Image: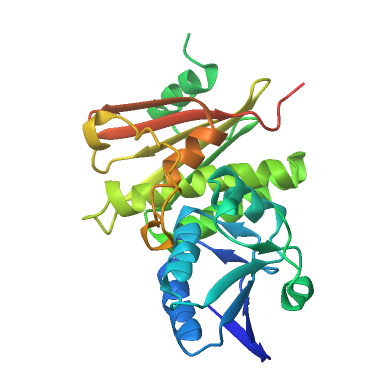
Amino acid sequence: MKLNHQDFEDVRVVCVDENRIDAACAIQFKDEMRGLSEAGPSRIILDLGNVEFLDSSGLGAVVAALKAVRHGQRLELAALHPTVQRVFHLTRMDTVFTIHDSVSTAVEGVANAS
Amino acid sequence: MRPEGNLQSKVARRIAPQSKENELRIILPARENAVRRGLKSIKNGLGPIGFSYDELASLELVLAEILNNIVEHAYRDNEAGIIEIQMSQTTDGLWCTIIDTGAMMPNGEPPLGMQCDLNCDVADLPEGGFGWFLIRELAHDLEYTHEEGQNRLSFRMSIGRLN
């Protein structure tokens, strides 16, 4: 599981450098995300642009990452593939997360009203 | 009426495995990494014969949920478990049967998989329990039996219908 991150002013963009978040890597993803948010600024953007497959374990791990942020810190998602977006939509998790079309709109702070 | 795909697969169990037109059979060890490889083989096998990207995405999700449940629950105490996947393309879509010899499903039935209630604080959001909900959203005609130590789960995906 490879997570890269880049810090901007007040924002840390975490990019998943893998094409899937599934049962085989969900726990590792969760642990690495926790480390990156603990030491991160008030806003974390998770760039899912490379992720073409997310199963229920992967979804659970993303939810766990949201629950792990500290008080006042935000975790938002960006650049979801249609297949990943569909899992969020079916489970209605798209109503829980702020989801941006792209990392650039996310960094600019323009939330996609989905 | 039982689907034709199921009858064919019952017969196939008693005779030497043979490859038939519009059928695919895969056997894999019940481990997460083997499930990953199996899903990849299935996608690579079905992609060139007319299944669209979206159709394969639905199939991959349903299979991943079922196979990972077998790895995590049915074969919880068995490192050497085997899973068999049979697929048959018909005019109704793709019939799939998943067979394992692990533990029976709780109460002998597949879980209902209700939509999780998200009307709560972030701290109380569910981190699991989405799998069977997704399976039941995307798969049709789900049937489960446990006979002679064998779990058989069959279902239909309305994808790749034959003309």
